[in-house]
Image 1 (cartoon, rainbow over the protein chains, first blue to last red):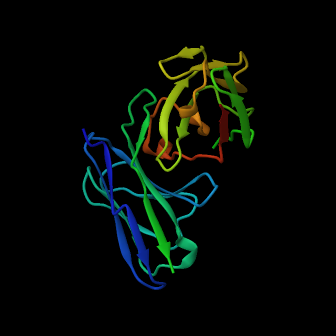
Image 2 (image 1 turned 90 degrees about the horizontal axis):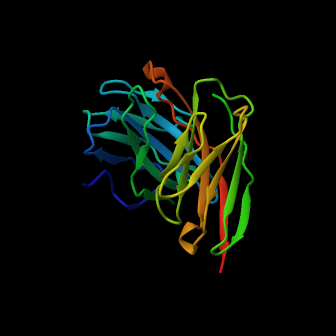
Length: 114
Length: 115
């Protein structure tokens, strides 16, 4: 049972380069999330997707785009990376039902922009 | 979104109980209280959640104040592996529309276990 899988685990980019962070879940969850976590800080929500075909902005969406490709996959794109986007990025998923359900997180992608 | 307030850090001795507090004075009647923790270099993991009654599971206990304006996560016998950042968050419930799917975290409490 893989849960939430993020790729890559580590990445170094030069300022201005673009890249896409991939996230996939195998739990048939409807909702998926992207967070960033700066050193010594809590998690900040970038974007989320409540279902296939829908996406919404979180707390810090500027500089990012997302795509909910299908129910399994939710990708995060940096079009022109900046040093301020150096962070650890976490993807999560959960299954919204009538009851509150837990979120499952991936192991993170550590991104450095130089 | 209703906000939670937690101490930035706490310390506890190994093999002693730990009580991690959370204030949520603006909680609504249908908000669930969820706790997650984040071990070093890992993604957060679910710990426990509750609505009104105290809850127990294999990881911890959750004590909820009668007025629901505060709650306490209880680790009954802390080990070194419990050193982590603990997040208290509120989730609207029941989930009746996708607008409630936003899931935000605060800065949490960094728990240090002293051997």
